Amino acid sequence: MKRLSLLLAVVLVLSLSVISHAQYIDGTYEGWGDAGDKSICYAKVFIEDGKIVGVILREFNDRMVEKDWTTYPWPQAAEAARTLGLQFVENQAAEADIITGATGSCVGYIKAVERALIKASPDKPSNKYFDGVFMGRSDVASRGYYKVVWVTIKDDKIVDYKAQRVLADGSIQDPAEYGWPLEQAREAYKQAAINSEPGYVDTISGATGLTLMSNLAVRDALDKARIDK
Image (cartoon, rainbow, N blue to C red; front, side):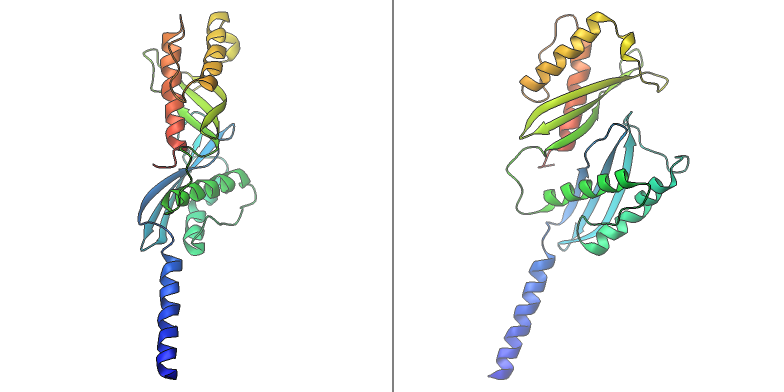
């Protein structure tokens, strides 16, 4: 009887061990951290047998262009991108050490992995979007510029919005150069984005191009915020 009880105990321990490790659904999941004024962090998390087996980390600047670590002048940020992925695998969680001099990047990666793991969880939130700030960009207009937006989401609603225009040479256009009609249209779009269905603002009179590009950029940000993707 004692041998049988011991065998049952071993089986129970092994079963609980399997359950504890199988906390995630196998697959590949993407997550984004909260966007700051100058960057946004991304994580791709690979789950096999319920465990984290690999993490790829990337960071984009305020033009939504991926940072090139071979030329980027801040080595601590490059170190974070290279080393934190292994820590996430070792910890089997969105947990990693903060690297001095790269706090923003580390916090962004941790949040991105956390959101990816929420997507991998069998018990997802009921919301459509994560709360937070997400960056998106439009396609390129015929004149060579595109829009980058910051969309703040709370309870599946857009509660704040800001945008900038990136010119063909990669510079950011000074808002003072927009002129009164365009500036008025930008403010009208912001209010409409907050009051409308997220990502779908009706064409603003006299600002068809602005409305179209802004909607595309906002939908790109919303895509990053989706919980079910």
